[in-house]
Structure formats: structure tokens, C-alpha cells
Image (tube, rainbow, N blue to C red; front, side, top):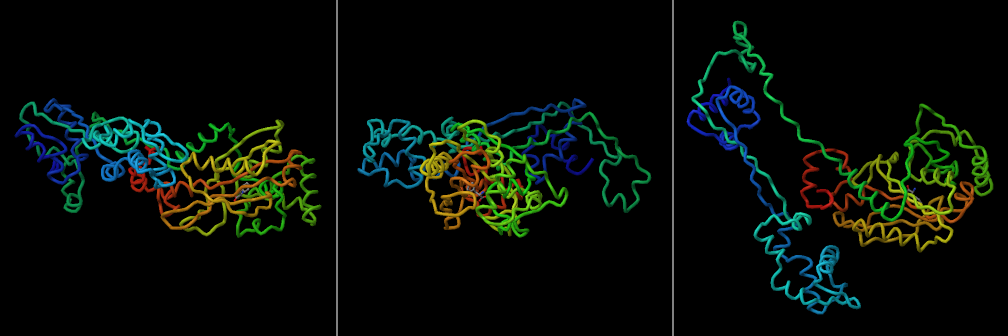
Length: 466
Ligand code: PHE
């Protein structure tokens, strides 16, 4: 029996003990007491009662609302001042406007915010704000991440009769002193009490990256897209050649691409396709296409491989496809670069599709993800024309940051693959917008898998993470 166990029994002989309080007062870990507790319980010397109490905790966001007012109320206020949607702060726009409309506090007329009767009343007294102030466990407050409900478990130990402190019943814990002094030699070792039930470890949670991926998956599925899947290890043919990337293109070099040694070669697809692709390279880039080069094995550098494969097998005239998958690049790692990351890929096959549709779908996707401010920049990819990059403003670094690329697949890509044009296409970063949404300063955070850091992130009240 160790010192704490003895103290515990002494305390019990003086009456009821609250486990948490007992441990806290002595600065010890409660876990160290479970074994003796189970032992006493098994012998019928004590009874244990558990009581769970709930405590409402107001989140950082909740506190901010208490101070500055709920965003929907601030929207009503601006409306009363005669202001319009353009005068709202990003938070008021992103959060406040939706709630104000849904709750019938305002109407929008020609860009102006017009408070309703109910809206005016809410300015005087807003029930939700009252509830928050009183710390009520209201479901809407919960859903909006303005409060958190903590469960406090209290374990009371009630002695049933006096407990004898028995010393010398053998060595329970082998310490340095016992070994050095040799005292163990003429003592018995205490047996394990195998009757004591073990404790369940805290159960696991899905990784943040996967939760975000699921959210993106849902957005595309809601827009009628079908998911594409495929291999991480690909032939250069699908990663580069099928996408009209010439064989001497710098991106193919070891400096950018990871090549696989074993196997060092993958078979080419069906002959007709290889012929069409190689001819386009020969005719347009004007060089001798080498089938050996196309058989080289790479870790895919983009998920555009999946789009190429999908098109090559497509029978239907129309289709919308997306994928979320890992890609690899031989890249110097820093706050916004990883050598292994995820891309959100997509294609739309439709004979009436045009560049405007592409801009719209990208805008709509980011809007649904919660990014209102994105910027399109002209760009270049060997496989698209026209091409663009998407940038978004990253507060934490006070900089615009690239989120991905898009364009219309060139005829040189889509005609050899499946004989049709146009196909809208894009490939977007998954980690970067997530880093921005979570206001992280460093993209590497996702892969350090430091649970304390993840815990901090979850506490920020990001609703979909809860
Ligand atoms: N594959 C490009 C990249 O990895 C993105 C892209 C995909 C661009 C499809 C245009 C069309 O950056």
C-alpha cells in the first residue's frame, strides 16, 4: 500500500470522500486511486455513488456576442440606420444576414436592409441573448457554438465500516529503494487483482482533414456530382502524357516529381488511345514521343489523373465528377507547402459548357464552403485553355494565397481521350482553405497530429468540427 492509498483509507475512516476533491487537495492523479477503490468496493468496505452535473460554458464567440451584440441584431441595427448589405462587416454578412432573414427580423429591398416589426422588437429584447447571458443550455446556442456543456462527474465514496490498514501484505510497487536495499529478497510480491475492471480509453475521433473532406464531399454530391477514385501510384502516361504535357516538360523532372523505382514501369493503356495521344504530342509539340517515358511510374502529382482516366472511359454525353485525394510533390516544405497533400478535383462534361459556367461553379463551391472573397487570375496549365488560378485572402498572413487552378481542357486533351469538347476542369487545394478557416498559421499543423493542438482547434467553436 502506498502513501496515497493509506491517506485515502484514513480519510474514509473519517467519513465520506469525494474522489476528485481528495485528489485535487493533495495534488495527485485520481487514476492512482482507482485500484484501491475497486479493491475496497470488491470487499464491500465502501459504496460508490456517481453524480453527473452539467455546467454551461460560454464560448469565445458567445462572449464576443454578449459584448458586441448578436450579428443578426447588428444587421437589424444597420438596417434601421438606413444602411445596405454593402455596409455590413464580413461577420455580419456571413453569419448575421442569414439568421436575420431566417428569423424574419429583416427584409432585403434593393440592397437595403429593412427591419420588420419583429426585428424592431428584437432590438429592445432578444430572447436568445437573454438566454446566453443567463447561461441557459439552449439548443440553438449549442448549435451555433456559443455555449458548451461540460459534464462534471463526481464520485462519492461512502465507507460501510471501518477499514483496517494492513501493512506488509507484500510489495505492490517495486521502487528503486526496494531494489537497491535488497529488501525485496525476503518479501512476498502482492498478486494482481484481476477482478478490477479496466478503464475504457477515450474513444478516437475522425481526423480534421477527413472531416473537412466529408464536408466537401457533401457539397459536390448536393450539386449532383459523382465521386471518382483511383491509385496514388500512376504511370507518367496518365499523370502527364494524357494531359498533353510534353515529355521534356520541367514539371516531369525529379526536382518536382517523385518517381517510383519498384516497379519502374507500368503498362500503357489500350493501343488506340496511346496512338491518339502520341500523335497529338508529335503534331503539336513537334518531337518524337517516347513510349518508355510514358511507362515510368510516379506518385501522382495531381488528381487530374483521375479526370483523364474518367474521360477515357466515359460513355455518357454529360457528366459531373469530383474527387478528393492525396497527391505528392517534391517540394520544399513551409507554412503553405507540403510534399503530400490533398486535392479537390472536378470535371463537367457538357457540350454547352463555357468559361462562365466554370467561374460560377468555382464561386458557388467556395461560397458553400464559406469563402465569399475569392479572386480569379489568368494562368497557364499545359492541359487547359483558357486557364485560371483561384486566390483567397488569408488574414493570418495578410496575403492572397493560391487555392488552385482550373480551365477548359484543351481539345488536344479531351479529343484523344474521348472525342469530345468542351470539358470544364479544376484542381484545388484542400489543406489551404482549411488552414484559413481554422485561422492556423501553418499548414503543417494538420500532420503533426498533436492532439492538444487539435483540441484547441475544436474549441474555437468551428461548428462543423463539433
Ligand atoms: N492539376 C492542376 C494542379 O495541380 C490544377 C488543375 C486541374 C488546373 C484541372 C486546371 C485543370 O495545380
